[in-house]
Image (cartoon, rainbow, N blue to C red; front, side, top):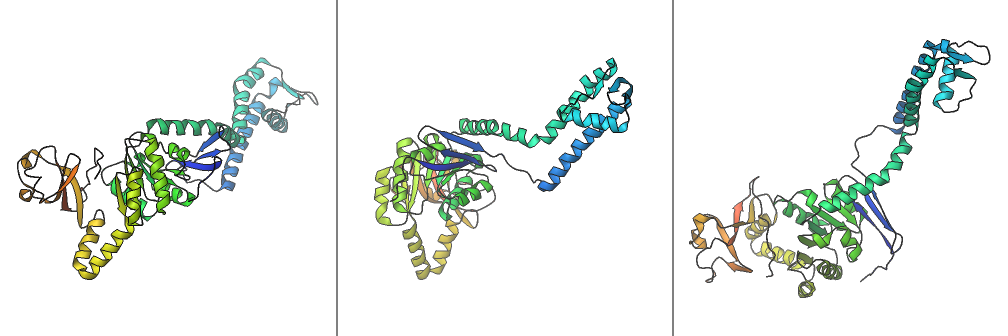
Length: 375
């Protein structure tokens, strides 16, 4: 198991933007937030456009001076022509100011105060606009990052954006959970780029480190999904996440079934053995291809048949699961999950929740689990 030291580099990204945090030492951390980018023109076109605006301001200034040329004095010949007007506009807007051409009348001086000076400011803004944007970017980044952190509550943290992580997010979002309430943690920058492109917040870094999980605000998360590539990494992430958040529901995936008890001891509420599940599905498909097709259909969210969890309605109270219109698989009562034929079920209660198999429709949603329970 690779354990990183106290020094390291990790990044944070919001949807459509990059939030980069570099930890130079234990006390110095900087952040950079990149806001969503719109489709921009070619850099050459942008420069050409800015130069054309600056030239337009220069021309306007020159004609303003030429229109009031009687109020200006040229130390060389005493008269102001169009060339002198452009010369004065150039040296004035560039703040060079040789002083060889000066406003001498009250009208010319008032024009310099209320017209030439604002044009000078506009000219400088156009030419150094990129620099001004860069100077304000850091403050804007910090403000966006702090606002995101303060608004993040009861969200879902997904560690690992591979095949398992993507499928888990898709299923969670089927409950109606907004994408803004999902934070992805992955050591791969390409994976986080893909996550942010899909609209999820992302943290680039090693999830076994508490600093990285804190960037994802895991201490305020409602549920944590751990879908790492290695079982030992999943164990360490589970331990770290449980230490930071005692009340969140943690679901983890492991490859080897022998590691499942270790995950539960580490604090996971539920453990899914991906290798064993795939093996059982393969065996079932060999013995009964039709049964394998049904199971694969149930696994695929949003098509064919779906497994959903919903509360018991008043009209169903007092009935047995077989009398319900839906195909009931299990009954969730308190912290227990009972089979449909379990004698302890008896009749349904208003506080029960049903796990049923339904035909998938655009409006079908898996009801979110409002309380964590240990199986």
